[in-house]
Length: 76
Image (tube, rainbow, N blue to C red; front, side, top):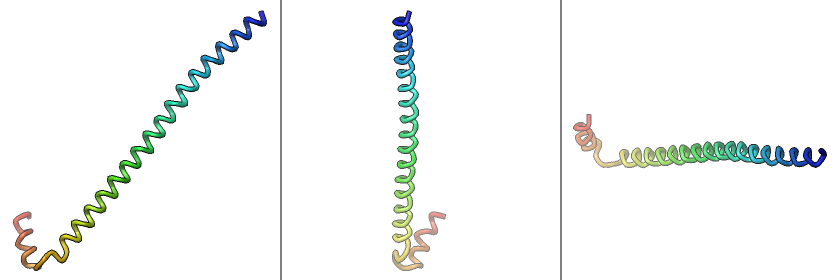
């Protein structure tokens, strides 16, 4: 009888370990995915800021103000 209980405890421990491993892996996967999404969003934001700064820099001192007004007039 004691041998049967030992086998039963071992089997339940093995099943519990498998279930725990699957749950742990899923939680870690979600965590990693969230970190990756945050990093991608930050890189996108940085890229947008840099492009905006470049556009502002190109817009300023880009020649005669009257000429810039004529160029932009058609865009409105």
